Image (tube, rainbow, N blue to C red; front, side):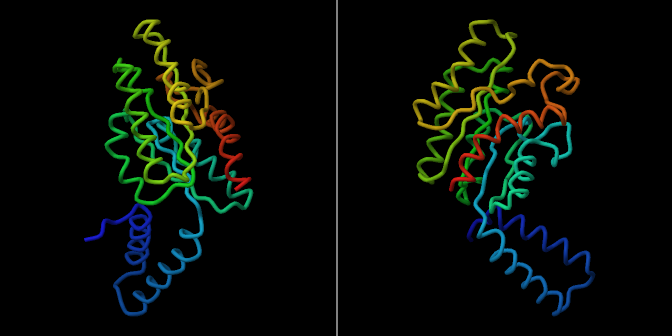
Length: 232
């Protein structure tokens, strides 16, 4: 049996909601659902290129409503410009690079036009070997490049506090420019530039940005996205 894609799954959930809201199913309801499905598929999903943010709790918008996370702010800007792109938030709280590598295939059922990789922070906080984190990031990028050579890949750089020692912290920071250079992908030097370490821009845990913090992260990310979506 053919595996259900992310897009198809989202469509199925929406249609089920429509059916339950309208009461018992009848031929008219079935026809309406089929027409809606066809309309969505033809006029929206298939005509819009995908921007996939693949990351951890920073991407997911931990502690906030999903519409306040920076990927949603990217979608809002795209919509305001009338551009035909849809953003998928593939963030999962607690995700490591190893976990991301394991769940990547499911997200690659549909081709992303832009793939933004934001992983590694949890590796650093847990003291996972630098070599392992780097290898996993490389493998994720290689998977995307192999399956979809035309996909534009952006790697979001991360830094960590010196809890694991200054040497580990310094080596961790170097992972991202090295991987970006070797795999020939675009690098955002530090995703949390202007946000990390500022109590007013982070939740009480000191790690996850507030709504205002996500607005600053959006400002960091958007120029890289804008270069790709406004000139394509």
